[in-house]
Image (cartoon, rainbow, N blue to C red; front, top):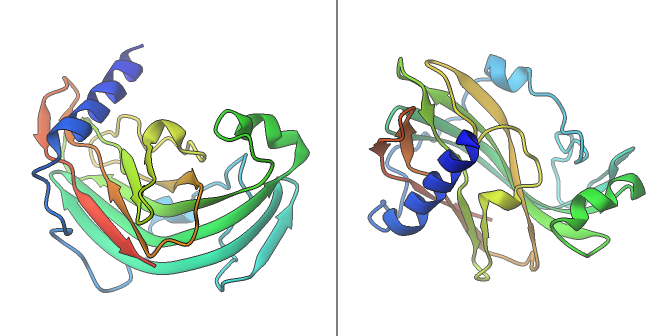
Length: 211
């Protein structure tokens, strides 16, 4: 219950309090970040096929979770500072998924389509402070087609929206089912950063990714 209340507070601050957030990231690194231990230890998702070997548009990967086809890819390699949070976005992809029959019920909570397109980003977040904080790397995603999806509909559930401890690093995917994949860009709005006792530390950041 405490976690649910915290995430509702996070989303409320994003929806009503991030209008003053900068339109462009305040601290973007043009160089590719080195592989961190968190990235190296990332475990494949139990519901979505592993896309790491999909590098070129049109490539397909088939495993026990379903068939995944890469439609668009963007190597971002950007680093963003949101208060004590250092957030790295390595890549962004638009993909088409035909889930295995055994996973259809899982995705039916999010869509009634038997197969669908989705957009995802791989992120690494680090709490550079010596205090626990609450942060969500993608509280809202909005596409150039006007679709707007909130964090509750993330298909990966890699635990990135949970409390992050002092000097802790987490890595994983966030992904959202979309109706139209012919977008030119999409924009991620992070949550605000909150202390463990729910005091706001830093405003949300908006990150625009061109495809």
